[in-house]
Length: 202
Image (cartoon, rainbow, N blue to C red; front, side, top):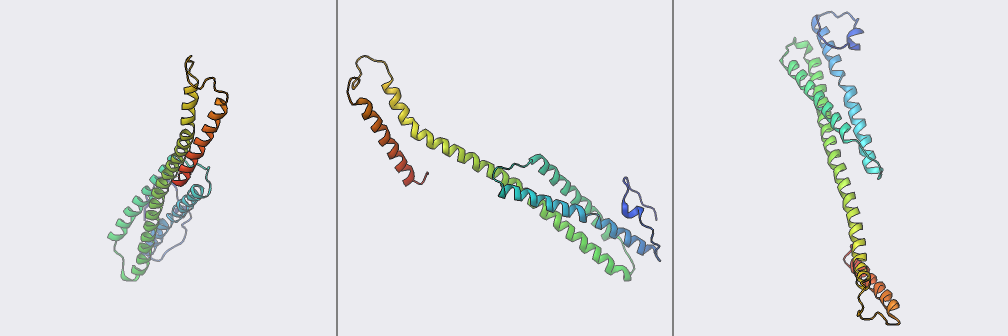
C-alpha cells in the first residue's frame, strides 16, 4: 500500500504493526487519519471557551478579532477536509466483517463534524457578542456625556449671558445678584437631576 502526503505524520512513521489483510491495514490507517482531527477539535473548543471567559468575566479585557477570524478559518478548513474524507469513506467498499469498524469510523467523522459546526457557531456568537458589548460600552459613554451636557448646558448659558460686557444690562449692580444666580443654578441642577431620576436616565 502506497501513501502520498506532503508532511510527515507520526502515525505513519510509527506504523510497524503487521496486519493479516490489506483491509485491516487500510482500516487502521483510516482510523489513524480520523483520530488526527481529535486534537484540533479539542484545541479549538478550549480556546473559544477561554475567549468567551475573557469577554464575560473581564470587563476591561480585549480580544483580537483578527486571531478569532483566522481561528474560524482554520475550523472551516478542518471541516472541509473532514467532509472530503467522509466522501471517500462513503465510496469505499469492504467485506461484511469490516462493516462494524467502518461504521464506527463514520460515526467518529460525524461527531467531529458536529464539533466543528459547534465551534464555528461559537466563534460567530463570540464575535457578535464582543461587538455588541463594545457598542454597549460606547453607548454608555455617550449616555454619560449626554447627562453631563444636560447639566452644564443651562449653566453655561447663564454664565455666557451674564458674561456679556454691555453697559445697560439689568441686575448688574444688584447687591444680591451673585448669590441669587448661584442659588438659581443650584435649583436648576436639582430640577434636572429630579427629572432624570424620574425618567430613570440615572
